Length: 236
Ligand code: DX5
Ligand code: ZN
Image (cartoon, rainbow, N blue to C red; front, side, top):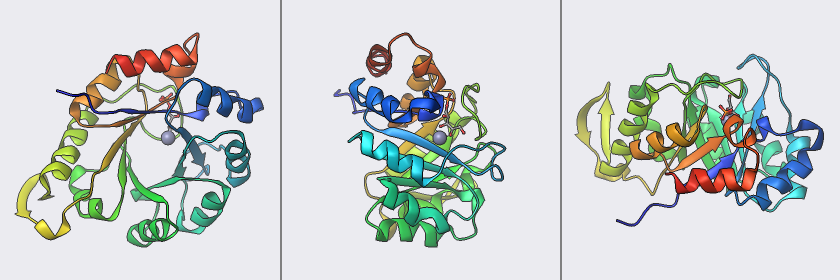
């Protein structure tokens, strides 16, 4: 069986913030597929990072796709600014807004990929109705806010259910299949995981159905980023 291409996205959260542009170049030279940029507002999560100006500076330094992960309240209000700064993918949190549909539609109208992220405690049963409206889901495998946390193995089941839902086009309610809805047929769909991803947990997530791996602490704590990415990719 031919192996699916797995996308590796180093998270710049674990890079050197004093040299973000150089770090972006280093990530590109190391063979990554994209760069993951964590935007935190100090309210939705108890941490602060950076805004559109830093994203624009990183964008000038690399031609890699930029995946902006918004961990902020009122994401709709900031979509345009991050797209102008160079975001290719904008992902926001289901729990951060009441305007989930509007925000997804707006990102798509801007011609960018729309991602919806779910905290670990958010039940899978809330996810299926939004899948046809987005291009990817980001399943948090740690509580959002900080790099370097331990992977939550309970999330593997959420990944499995999401992949099954996308592949078989099943609409589920509370984990029970209630309807097969041909009309809402889902396009090829990305399932991204974020938090505590290393060689072992990355392999488990891919086996469960994820095809994009975000990794911060693990990749940046290895001696050489290029070989760390190669080893992660080979080991999947
Ligand atoms: C956590 C962030 C992650 C973080 C992952 O809230 O969304 O992107 O950088 O980092 P590691 O791989 O260190 O858990
Ligand atoms: Zn992230």
